[in-house]
Image 1: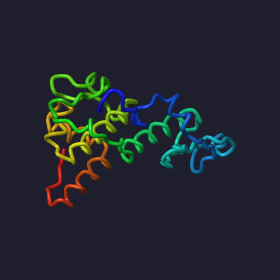
Image 2: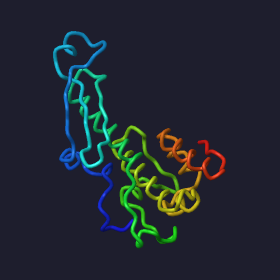
Image 3: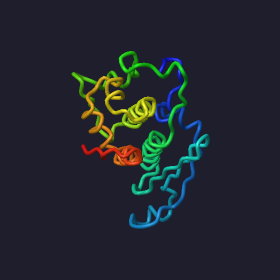
Image 4: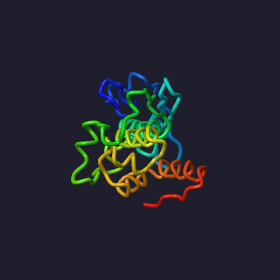
Length: 180
C-alpha cells in the first residue's frame, strides 16, 4: 500500500463516507413502545458506489441507530470491498509500510483494538487487503503488518465473517482451517 493510494471506503472519515450514502428512515417494528411506533427511528444506509447496505433499529433514538448503522456499514465495506492492487503495491513483506493508523495500534508486535471501536473497520479492511495482496499467505501478511501470525488470526477472529471467509479460501486450497 503506497501513500498515494486512495483510502479504503471503510477508512473514510464519517463525514466523507456520508457523501457516498443514501439514508432511509423507517418506523421500527417490535418492542419499544409508542415512541418507536410513531417516529422513524430505524436507519438504513446504502453505499452508492458498491450497493452495500447496513441498518440499525434496535435503539429508540434515530441518532444512535444512525451511528450503529454507519459502523455496521463500515464493517460490511471492510469485509466485502478489496482495494485495487497495482504493480507497485506488490512488494516483499519487509518493504510494505502499513498505514499510520495501523502502526499506531501495534505495540511490541501486538495489535490493540476493541472490535467495537470506530477504527476497527478501517483496520480490518487494511488487514484483509494485505492478506489479499499476499494471496492469503498468513506469514507474509503478518510480517508485512508487523505482527505475529497468531496476532493476525486473533484479530480476524474478532470479525467472525472475516475469519470464516479466509477459512473458506483455505479449504478450497486444501489447507486446514484457522482457529483463534
